[in-house]
Length: 602
Image (cartoon, rainbow, N blue to C red):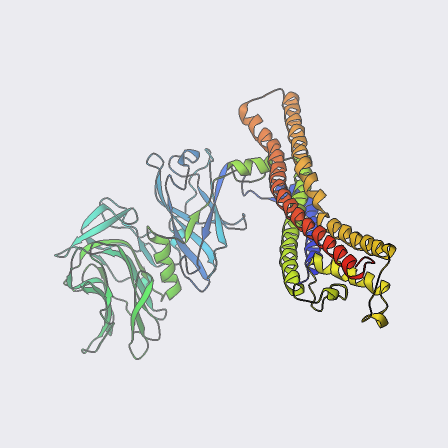
């Protein structure tokens, strides 16, 4: 590409950048003022972001009413800013208006650990841009959780957080457990869980129309940890009028089976291996069209088609054994869910990704403090929040200067690189040519070469001094004609030197002027900060520090402009000096050659 065209493109971009900078400076305060805050009574908030891309949950479709587990700890939450029991915590949708239902499974302000379930209205597949807000920091707030509402779309949810008695269903269905035998209140993957001994421990639920598995299919899911190989043990079973449903573990492999009365049975392949001593998320789903599928850690492992519509399962249920009270399960369970609907593969994958300890799809952002603008309470957020309009004007000016400097450094650097390269090529091409050809013009174009352009000037001047019809005769030029030739070539050299030095004054102005502009912004900002303190009649470090920090930001921007400009200027001046020497030498060579070939003393 010709350097001139490259220049034109760069400066068109520069013009757009200036316009953008002006718009940013003009709209900065309006943008800050328009940031919303759900309720001024809450002092803090965090952005909770969901990643459904392949690096996160790897969910491809949009999901609605998703129950997401949020794990809070000292690494992602400042518990001292919330009430000790967490009753001031609220969740709001990304529109900062819609309050979401949530359930505190556990919240320990002293140990600084919390497990909170939130119902997210919509989670978009294949993106990491979805988010909700978590608000906290209101000492007057009373409990706002809705335990059963948070699990309204799931038929039965058992957290096993009880220490004694019977496990309780946390969903709106409020399914009652008829019998439980096993160990409760044990530390588990999500809070507390249960352990079953493989001999007689089980949990049974009497038939309940709210859990009839008919037209919508069914789904059973749980977190499971086995200690060793099992012999055809049952995780979940349910009786029906025509068939029995079994989800079990044989050796270390998960399987699902629908056994019809009369002996016909459909069983998934026993290839879904569970590693002993490790927590795994398991699920079995039956669709209304008769497809039976098993999942391990969110991955569809195997499926089998029963050959017709799914039979209705509306009888008693058992967790940890068969309905008949045999084939007991030995191991630990947590977060058992029983649904009278066939959940999609993406929803099951979302359950696994959001509930496990090594999840990568739910991220709690930085703490944001409510100070009228809702900016981050981190150091840079405080600085930018407190920059005044005059400060933004200076920073905007410095930004434009910095953009100009970088464009000049890059365009000039690239131009000088091409010029030096093509100068060398031009010299190589003219070394073996006839000496008189130097005044006839090069037959090869080197548009980025300064020596080539001087050669063109020399050829043009000689074409005026030498009659083309006498080209083969012995030509002699007078001293005045040779002086004219020399002056014209030197004019071309001066023009080339001027072009090489063009725009470098912008860099020198930036080196010397940018720090002073930054200093002006700093002094002005400090002056206005202390004037405001004097007017208010009160001063403390918390009030002074943000204003002073924002004032110093102008100096930082000044230095960020001046330092690259200084290095860039020194680099370009070195290149200009080297290229200028080349042009001087070439002009001397042309003048000496003209005198030797056409001078009167030859």
